[in-house]
Image 1: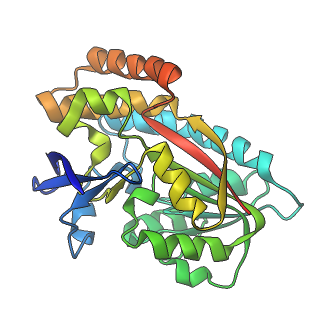
Image 2 (image 1 turned 90 degrees about the vertical axis):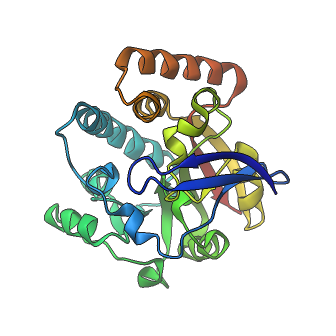
Length: 276
């Protein structure tokens, strides 16, 4: 393990953390890993656990989210192999993705550890469980983790649980940030997608492929998340300068996407993995 860089928790605690490089897998790990992670999620600014739309950044996030939800549901429909469209969303937040899927005929389940987020989901008529153990014994065609894998404290054991919950020939859909992207390199320790210590792991494409291959998954497709470069750049500008710097963030986000077309290293990517 080699020190990659030092950064801090810009959104909640202000504490400093190190990112160390696992050169074999080409991924980063956050150190030290706090024993009690719950307190680092206790913030009104933690947007995925709220439906807030007060600030410009929140309004932008919610507008993009509505469009992205439709695209995500349309995408997973391509991997359905029978009429029983069963879906488990891990880290479901306030349930919006599951609401969208349910409205298009999916049988949905979701897991979300945050009580506040589960209560907001309940208001939308979607019940979420608090742990993967609560859906033990069930099988799903599709399991999705939208920017969730990087949060899991027990990575290997949780992947084993996901494997057991997935039907044979089922599909795992994972979205994660990419620390090898242009915007990550540009912002360095201010890159918002490091989001320490909530993000415990920071993946490259190779790391995703290798980690899941050990559990019997084959990577069948990788797709860029175009909007992430802009949103992450907007937050990163705020962390770096204390200002929104909208036009600069727009430029860095656009440049990151352009560089991703050349290098394959986008700000965030969706990985489609098939259970062998």
